[in-house]
Image 1: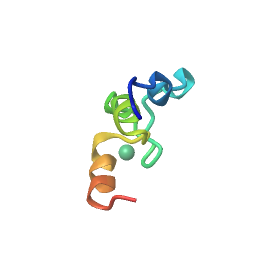
Image 2: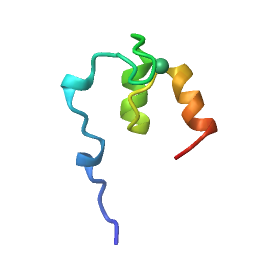
Image 3: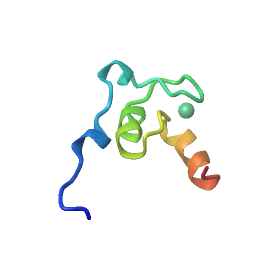
Length: 55
Ligand SMILES: [Zn+2]
C-alpha cells in the first residue's frame, strides 16, 4: 500500500553534483539533472545511449 511519497528515494549526495559525466567525463549541467531524474550520472548525449540500450 502506497499512501505517501518517499522523499529519501530522490535524495542525491551533493558531493556528486559536480556535473561531470561518469561515461565521457565531460562537464555539463545536464549531468546533475539526469542524476536526479534518472539516477544515472550522465550527460545528455550519454543518456541517449542508455535510453536506447536500457539495462
Ligand atoms: Zn557523457
